[in-house]
Length: 368
Image (cartoon, rainbow, N blue to C red):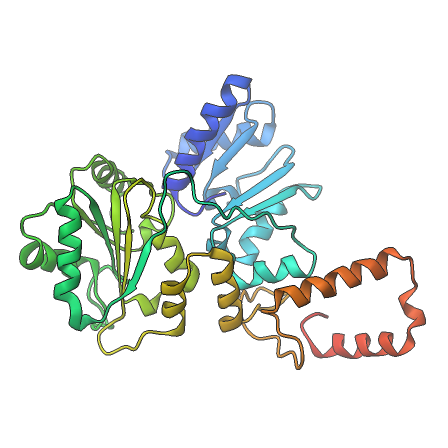
């Protein structure tokens, strides 16, 4: 399950190339396919035998999507899905399927679940061969002239740029840069000698696909967009990511947006510009400082809290008096000690004082 149709389609194409020569049949279930084709695919998936691997978006958890024998669930960009959505997909099996969650920046809740022993962790912390770290810089609105010169110099070398805005059109929040107005302004006043395009979620699927294909082919120098480009967009020639109103985005989202550049051999840049009159937040300074997704997840955990363990809140404080949930090393030691105690076969009830404390705390927290 992937959060966007672009990403789901890319995964389907890649996995089909790998598996179909081995006789494994792959299906793609997304919202934009025609109703008749969608119904037929859902019937094949439910019946079993015709489709071995089904890749899709939220369409996988719609009422009519059932599985014959679901044994493995992979959730890509899992921070884009809610607790109930992930549970819904797992619940489509009569037995608990294997689960693989993938993300460049684990949300606080997911990071916390690894510490409670609910998830095992594999970390891929190496850049693919030939790629360079992305240079990340914070800019204020007063230094825009110099910023635009840096971007234009890159485009003069044949590189491409993204400009991400927090909203599509002007609304109640007039201080925010919007795709529509920023596209017109940049096109007329700042980069009249460059080819620009715009992209946002209200455009038709065919129009979005066409714009992305043409941008990837190098027909446009700059793409002014909303966060629709956050995942599943791979343009190796794009080396500039300018994020307007950067304080409006979460840390995981900012890290994902930055990951749209630096996908080729050329040096890439990410520019963070807060809204006019806004001071840079701590998370913007942290993003400027680090490109380590797990470090940023720990910062996010410290800033936002882990949320409820058994509830649906994915952030918020647990209000612990002594332990610090960002202290990963200490929590790993505590988990190892708990595993050792349980494996020793000791009956915990014999520790009466401990048993009394656990009972008391269960009544006070959402652990209950």
